Amino acid sequence: MNRDEVKGKAEVLKGKVKQAAGDLTDNPDLHDEGVADEAAGKTQDAFGRVRRKVGDAIKDVGKAIKK
Image 1 (cartoon, rainbow, N blue to C red):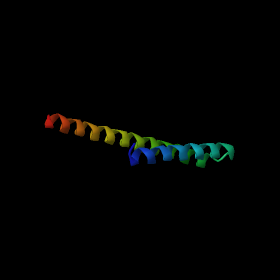
Image 2 (image 1 turned 90 degrees about the vertical axis):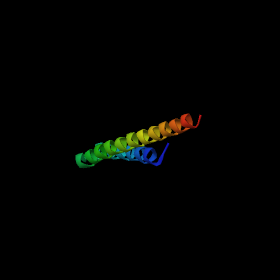
Image 3 (image 1 turned 120 degrees about the horizontal axis):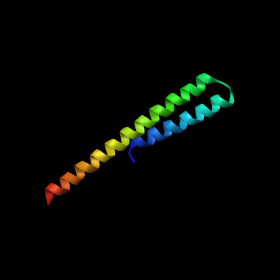
Image 4 (image 1 turned 135 degrees about the vertical axis):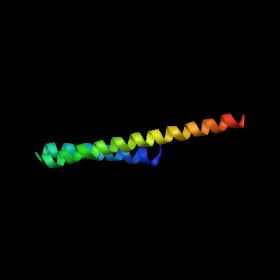
C-alpha cells in the first residue's frame, strides 16, 4: 500500500463515522459531510491503487528490458 491508499482508507472511515454520528444526532449536515468525506476517500484510495499498479508495470517493463 502506498500513502494515497492509506490516507484514502482513513478518509473513508472518517466519513462513515461522521455519517453514523449524523444519523444518531439527527444532523443531516453532518451526515452529508460524512458522505462527501467517504467519496473523497474512495477516490484517493483508487488513485493510490492505480498509481501502485502503474509503478509495478514500469518495474516489470524494466526487468523485461534487462533480460
